[in-house]
Amino acid sequence: MSDQPDNQFNDDKKISALYHAGSTAQPPEHIDQAIRAAAIRSVRATPRRVRFPWAVPVSMAAVLVLSVSLISLIHEEAPTVSDIRPDVSVIHAEERKKSAASRETSRDQLSIAEITDMAQTDTDTEQKAERQKTTAAKRSSQKSLASAPGLAGTRAEFSTGLKKDLGTKAVENCEQLSHSACLGSEQCSLVMNEMINDPKTFVCRRSTNRCDTGFIQHSDTKESCESRPGCAYISDPCFCPPDVTCICNGGLPPQCHPRKNGTLLQPE
Amino acid sequence: MIHDNNDEHLMLKFSRDGDVSAFDLLYERHKASLFRYILKQTRHQHTITEELFQEVWSNLIRAREQYQPSARFSTYLFQIARNRMIDHARRISARPVSDPETNHEDIANAGHDDPSLHAHTADRIEQL
Image 1 (spheres, rainbow over the protein chains, first blue to last red):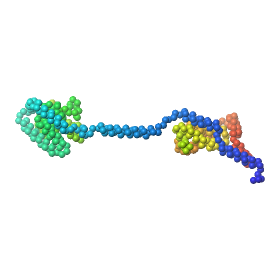
Image 2 (image 1 turned 90 degrees about the vertical axis):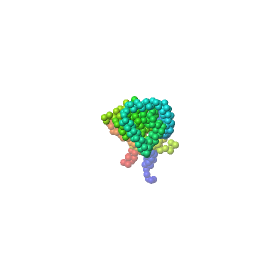
Image 3 (image 1 turned 90 degrees about the horizontal axis):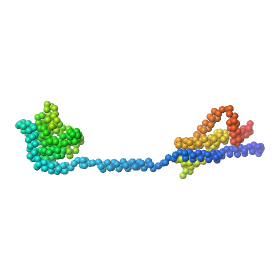
Image 4 (image 1 turned 180 degrees about the vertical axis):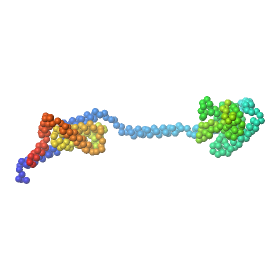
């Protein structure tokens, strides 16, 4: 080492210094400032987005609370089956009152009405025989309904209750009868409201012909209707009497219509 | 604490939240290494190095909103630098040769600014 020339030693030192300077090279201060200023300018030029980190959980919670409260409100306001079904005892009491009042006030008129009806129908002895047949068939059908389980039993009970309340006597003022009373009446028929033409809206009208007079819609059967000459039985399987829970609801109540040459005649 | 954050997080803070202090920290961390890298690649031409160095950071600032932390920040930064140097090389190669003023200027600048180039030249001479 000692025999190395001095100028080489000096060069080594110089190179080392240069190398050292290169390894610690830094950008000039003015470039630093320019770059930092550019970053600040860029940030200021861009509109800052306001961030709400709590917005998503809060909105989800709000939606959840609203949904739960809405569902509970709907459940509270929805009517129960007991709300929909009227109280049978109340109906029976009302019908009892109505029938008692109508029995007293229109006894004479009823007899006139009966006479009028009889005049409309056949007046000979055949009619009497026919009526006897009808009554017999009615009784048999009532028996069968009463003995039938499930819905039939319910209908039979309903019919029996009505009979008990209204009796078998005819009621003249059909419009004032409730639907259940109308169905159990011999002189009134529950029919579709033709003014509205809605199969779910019924009106109680007076029976106008020999077929529907004496035909109890609630309990009479096809046989009891068609045992009368010239009458045809019409029923809808979806008809559901009042106060009875049925699977389907919306059809017309059973009716006994006059028929001529195989064609059904519209009620007068 | 901002000092505990890694480069990618700092860059995200700068790109998404506009946090300039995060950028300052990033700049402090990487300016020297980037400058030396460019200096080496440009063969110690200080003027060009400074120009490219500034372009790299400007690019980074301009495209900050597109930043995705899919790789390390240093990789991202040096990739920008590399692309800028390739662009620069293309510009140089496409430059017409009949531009004596510019060429002379570049040569003169390179000669004056680059002490390591002097050392390199001296070393070569010594070897000869």
